[in-house]
Image (cartoon, rainbow, N blue to C red; front, side):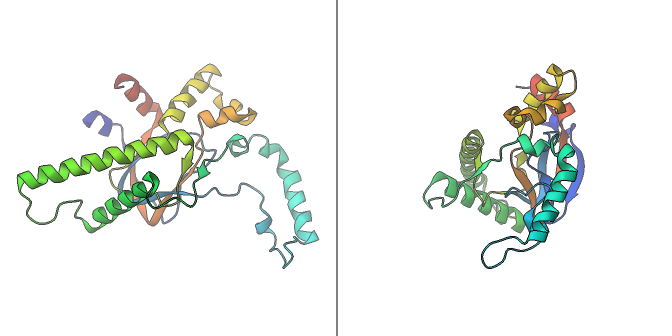
Length: 237
């Protein structure tokens, strides 16, 4: 644990709803939440958007002038778009209409409860707690943490998320497998890993496929750079 702490940089503060990482960004850092909260946000529209130039009419049509502006912007940015990481990265799927009794709903509830406890400063312990009671509470928390990690791993494997996942103090946020594969891709391409990003779905292997944003009150995190975290993971599997 102390060795891992020695790798940390920061702390770094993110303002309310600020992006911590975005779809298509290379996986360069991991983050440990120190205070505040973070959540997975919906995908942002990349580059040109129809909403940027005008609203739809009652029939849902876009004005001719707006369409012309969009085409002009697309023409002038086509060259840079070819090398945009986001163009080749498939976004994680949002699971909607989650059943209240599902493990995903229970996960959301437990993460939300934990965030509320941290915010109130109780963190599961209130007032004077006997050693025996403390051990029981710690055992329950360990069981809850194990459940949360198991369900989060399933979501990660499915490349999916639900809209009410809240991460608070102590949560370690990292696309570990993509971080490692990104290092391997860099090695195989002679250090020019970016060239493979725009050439197909292989980009998903070392780019973020979700948007992580700070919560309503922002958050403070410790930053773990890929350059030091990957060697640490290799030495401590």
